[in-house]
Amino acid sequence: MKVMFEENQEMQPNEAKIVTHPAEKSRWDRIREAIGQSETELVVIQAKNNRQVRIRLSSVIAIESEDRMCGVRVVTGERYLLNQRLKYVEKDFQDTSFVRINNQTMINTTHISNFSAAEHARIQVNLTDGSSYSVSRFYIQNFRRKLS
Image (tube, rainbow, N blue to C red; front, side):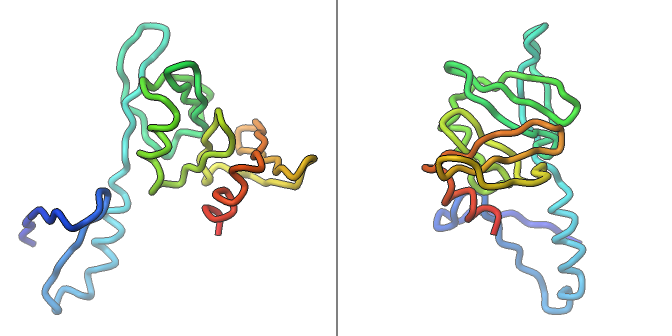
């Protein structure tokens, strides 16, 4: 199969359009699956040696604000630093499975084990690694929208 790329200023960032011949319609599922398997990576900093490391975005459980940087926690329990403020991370990850749940935290919705109502109109979220977070009232609508 021949692959061609072209630019279109009218398209949104993080958007791609694939055009095929009608005879190739039977391959669309395989093409969609192949593109979905090309995992996004995140460049983070190892705090102990200040080296940059690439990690898979799906392995990230939570991103927490730490001054002018973010702490990134992955499934294995390791912690990394991301040299970006949380508000910019939120903007970059708006089309992913991440959702901001309070002023300091974003979580990966694929790692939610369960959630329940908590005091003061909040939601308590438990993640697969055993950690739990509270969704503030301000972010509840975004949280519900992301899960539906």
